[in-house]
Image 1 (cartoon, protein in one colour):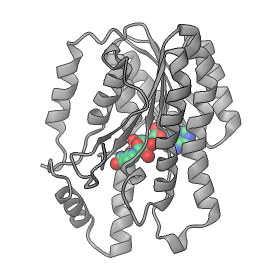
Image 2: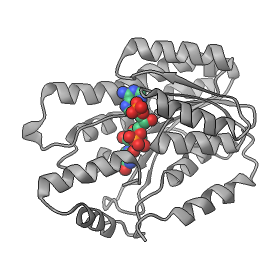
Image 3: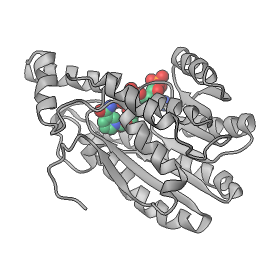
Length: 280
Ligand SMILES: NC(=O)c1ccc[n+]([C@@H]2O[C@H](COP(=O)([O-])OP(=O)(O)OC[C@H]3O[C@@H](n4cnc5c(N)ncnc54)[C@H](OP(=O)(O)O)[C@@H]3O)[C@@H](O)[C@H]2O)c1
């Protein structure tokens, strides 16, 4: 089975009964309206965390905020395009005003194009670096004073396996994700003095709208049927399934929990074992 939905339910049910001591905390999740960000927001809400999310489309923000509130937490949605510095500044200021405090930042939002090197312009490289790496840096910079105030804090950066592996159609992702991994390590060293941990998750192929678009683009480039592209990708995953957004959320939950209080500056791959490089 390509999409292990049943197993995802087990992940959610399995950890819902555990106490991660997160009740009453506040998390900001960029790109929290859909995909991996939404799964992280929902899983944190399952543990009593109040959530502020941002994204560009009002409809998906409203839907996710309603789903978060159904879990009994406070939730706020803010329209923001993280490629714009002024939107980032407004999101953090508005979210702090609404929530009153900040304990957890999840940097996740991204948009990207898949194309071979000779079709990628400077602007496309610049855009991807801006929307991912620079946005993560800018939001972390604005969030840090609020985390410091709490005396402890968590930052989780969502990177991508292209930080470690060659992906010919996703070179802009790779450049940005390598930067995210490096920033995670460097910023963790700085933020440790404030008892703030900074970690990174590299998702493998995760069943979200974005990955569907990547598969569609690969299908267009190669002329292969989309299902053939998916089957080929799944064959490369030793655990034999696409990753579910909840698999990534479970790793984020661990980084946010007291169990990870001595874990910082780490990048963990949640990729079903697909990366072949030996990296420790
Ligand atoms: N899915 C995968 O296989 C995979 C693999 C490796 C890494 N990742 C990483 O995982 C993260 C999430 O990916 P995903 O697959 O969950 O993507 P997704 O399903 O496309 O969701 C992206 C989320 O980010 C928001 N967003 C996109 N561009 C934005 C912008 N400029 N400003 C503000 N919000 C924006 C989207 O809302 P709006 O469109 O409404 O703005 C949406 O909420 C990304 O950092 C991605 O690089 C994913």
